[in-house]
Length: 548
Image 1: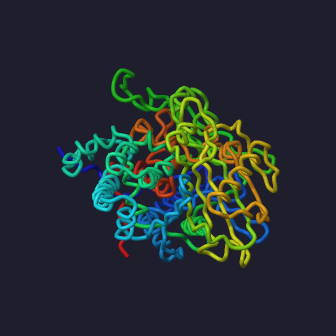
Image 2: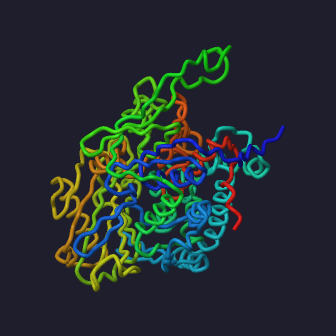
Image 3: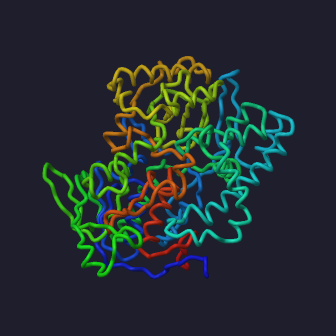
């Protein structure tokens, strides 16, 4: 019996496809399906595409509203190559050196993490004797785990498990089982004693919407991405990535409709007896009892409808299932979500600052001393907002003069907090809810103290805040999470759920709340998985790129 999987390389175009949501996942899905020969309409609730990767401009400052770390560049380049171009042709990418700066609460010292592996090894050795050699082994393991994940798991729809029964997986099976069962925090702690090094290696769990105390140590592969591969930045900001994706989607024939708030996924019942003569409810897998017929959306005060043979929702999966479908058509009803763990929400700050801020790097992380308490407040049974908080500061004006007036600084701050819409929403120039604005004041004061910028608050000339309620209202995000369901053991890989509805034929999912998960690269891969579903492709690797 072959276990290699069906590569399904034949394209099946010509169907009417509607994609819901114009974020990274939706744009990529629409583009790839248009390239397959389908007629594709993309519906976006906001007045511009981008989703979490949006843009906001005021007072001569231009802010990326969400993602700001350019990791896994080969995945982004792969998407563009599937569209007949490349990341190099579409974007101007700059390698950051140092990759990022870390400021520790214990003594307010700043540690710059270099852009290349030998320099990082030297840094670790300087902070803890013997840590350099330990890091070499750690990164070797991270690279090996990343390679096998990319080859066998990230690009799999898990429609069939037979393609996973390959020698490269089987020989690593004992290691993979250990990595799945041990939390990342324990995996790191068994190799490094210095708390600063433990934090540098544990923090990438936040990129996965999780805690280093909950995320499986399988995700130590994240350290290969920032410490081996390095961190890039697209000049012009991440809005340049959205512009490039929009451009290739439209060139492929995608029709993009903004200001289109989807109110329902329309379906018709299937006569299962007629569709599958002789079938029995007692035999085989349960078959869908409805099929998609289109999507209804509100725009300009009226409700419109677009007919479709296939619907791909790249919107929040909880919203898709519990709001856009009737109860009897839901694969993931409210009961399912009551057992799920949300990723964190966030307090976001967009600050225009007068004068320069050399104390901050392009990426700067502030880490609290009581690491476990910080994450426990966000992910524990009884949640609360950490104070002080571990947080992230992005100063893109350190690299890109186009994002701020000459001589001034563009500062974006992200503070992970519990997923709780009750915290409130933000606004411009203190126009947000009182609690959100008070938290913002405390965060600005913390950055000022830790980074030795005593006059920071007085130099802020533009201020916008964004809170959990904004994620819920703008992005229909479940519980106001900023990322999606957390990457815990029970919410990773095939346990994260299927990217195809079991109840509605022709309904598929993309984006951060389905497989493979959170982040720009994962959302791009989720789009490719929809293509694989439609091709009946059960292979585990990326789709073959066109021959140049």
